[in-house]
Amino acid sequence: MNNGNFGGYDPNRNGQNGYNNGYDQNQGYNNPYQANGYQNTPYNNQQTPGYQPYQGGFDQQAPSGYNGYGAPVVGTSTRAGSMSLADYSKKVFLWMGAGLAVTFFVALGFMLFLTSGDEIEMYTKFANFLPLFYGGLVAELVLAVVLNFFVAKMPYGVSLAMFFVYSIVSGVTFTPILVVYDAGSAVFCFAAAAVLFIGFAVYGIVTKRNLDKLGPILMIGLIVLIVFSIFGLIFNMGGLSIIISIIGIAVFIGLTAYDVQKIKKSYESCAGDDEILNKLSVNLALQLYLDFINIFIYLLRLFGKRR
Image (cartoon, rainbow, N blue to C red):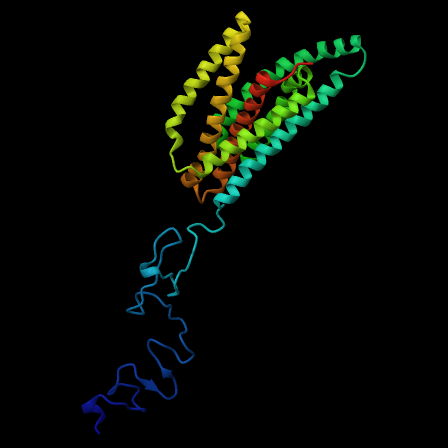
């Protein structure tokens, strides 16, 4: 067989008359592969025709479900380490519960302090407490506005710290309610508020109905509630107090379902961005905290027994 005619194998001529880039018994395959394997030859599109690895990151879709190394991608998250909906929901309710606990213990501590001692001593304590009470009302308003409208611009730790400051201040302003109402009726109304809150929170979670349409109605209810409350303060109408309490309970149990459903919707909008989810968890915890507190207060006004 003539190597020149057939382009065959020539061990001495290093592929000059045979296969181009053929085998050399001293060097091995010389091009494109070296004797010691695939040295200095990157495995890429240009030098390895037919192989086109997926060049994108996790946020892009690999061709035919394969990643950059030819291995199938099975169950890969779009963003590594992102918070799950369950974790996000737990965080919202955890901060809400912690805030309620702080408020309760602060109010209980002030109540025990103010109601200890003789009549003159109690009078002096209440007189000194009033500036703190009115200052707390102003601080509550400021903190609520900041946490509702500027939470996305603050570091997560700062917003969380402000939420707990708000809980402490609320404990101060909540103190007169514990002083005025009998402990037994306060416990009963707290349990009733917990049942209502949990029931409508579960409804907000499981319902397939979009509760966004309730938003404008609930806002109108809040406006009516504020107007009635102002009239009640000015004219001191006993019957109006019952109407205000019923409207207040209806509005805030509706807001409970509405705000709980927002947990899932906010997660779907910001999934993968743990930083903003952490911040939103504080904001939603505050809203649910206020829903529960207001349900409790209006139940107490409706059914509570004064000392």
